Image 1 (cartoon, helix red, strand yellow):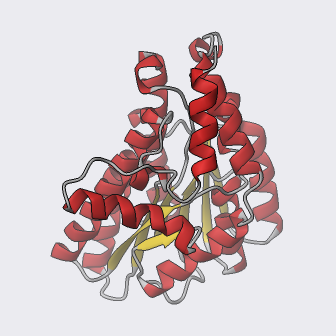
Image 2 (cartoon, rainbow, N blue to C red; image 1 turned 30 degrees about the horizontal axis):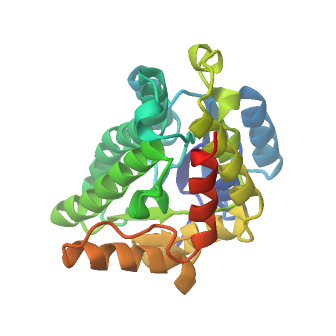
Length: 303
């Protein structure tokens, strides 16, 4: 639980756009030291210039969060300049669709590398630093927020790699919460599960490895890409709205953070869990939006 953010340090991955950029803006408004991390140099440069103009200390680093070596270098640089961070937002993410058996090894390595290993590296490198600071200073307060997705809770079809990565982040973060509670009362954890929010997540191909950029997409991948872009583009909750929810959760030490809290959005989680404990077959993830499932089924079965 962090009540006073002024003068504290925030490490934000995926800071060049979307939730990361909006959280950086809130952090700057609160007078925090900022560590901006992104793999896209031009977006990172723009974010750095904006935050410096806001008058707060800024460190910007181009980092591939899937790389252990690059993340280790980042952690060392953060410790040297600012000491242990207080807020770590493991948020960098990419998206990919398609029937689960049609994804290549390169697809799996890229998406799991960013969406899962990026979170793993953020936790393994910064949490020990934060625990050390907490041991030295009883007044220290820290918080880690990991970005998963509603896809990690309801397993929609034609999104296998993304679902697997985000489900792992859900479990990892819940475990982190419990593990932290075993050893300290000074560091909290939150899990962000966005639904459809207008960000650049469905334009992830802009930062793909060159080997993937040359790979021809399958029919199911093209369909998944098109439907995902349509859903995200028409989302009514903004990235700014979600960023505010993230900070509200940090201040309240609240674990679950949902971009959408309507019965329609959360109903899919309820129905899935209910079927699970009743040992029924998996429920239709489009139970509350049957037209989406019908369209997907039609397009995949049409030759």
